[in-house]
Image (cartoon, rainbow over all chains, first blue to last red; front, side):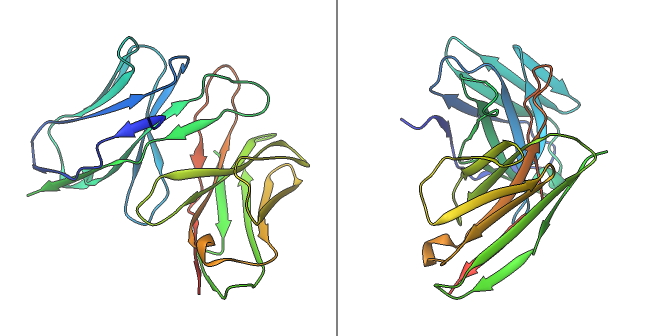
Length: 114
Length: 114
């Protein structure tokens, strides 16, 4: 089983739609989670951090379910500019001075159509 | 504010040639620094990380090496490139103080080994 699993998509949605991605992780000791956005041939950019049960930022909502070991990202009122690959990222269970180890999912591709 | 630079942006090198990629961070002190590789259509793979000058940890055995000669400078090198070294190389930084573990990425170097 992969440490962080995502449906690669693509998710094709019309403008204005609500879309949700799920991500499952295998390390039950993981404490912190992140969603990054990566545009084609560009670097990943931090979209949202999740340190407790969830986080909301405008049209974007992330929710964490520790019991089932999954994180979701909900995008409301999709815009054309939301088209990108969304990476689910999990902080490893062991955190020490050796560095904060992030494990990246393979990403979910979203395409928003007019 | 913090900024991270990588160069070159793109590179085409023949098999067997040496490699040197540079990453510098501005606007922060004593960051953790990371080198990742993203092969075409695949997820991010952590190659090296560093928590201080001269301190390098390797995550994946390979023909690459890393060095940190200064606090905010991280260099990825190879003596002889392989075809399998082609990919998108990303440098990232973090300052995991007070429990925040976000990593921020540079613009990346796209390497093609021919």
